[in-house]
Length: 88
Image (cartoon, rainbow, N blue to C red; front, top):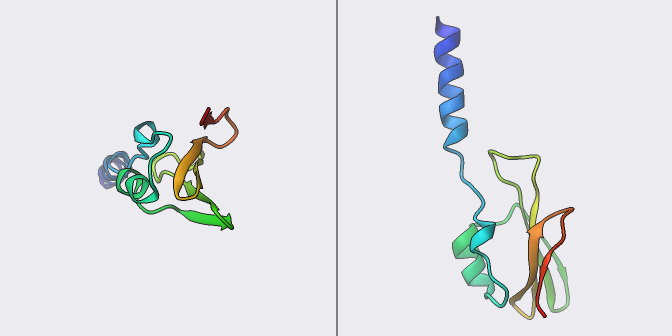
């Protein structure tokens, strides 16, 4: 019985983990706007005027998302390994 209660607790806590709101990101957004929507990234890299913010949702650790910033504005974003949204 205790094992079932523990399993239920784990499932409930796992379901409450933060979601990544990549659908709220738009091309041209500023970095502060992205951070407000997405929270702090898991990892950051960049060079010069380009920066990549990487996100891994706690409840979907097998999915990886990125936001590509150029001059502090979103140039592209999406799930790693899929076709990105890009400015035209």
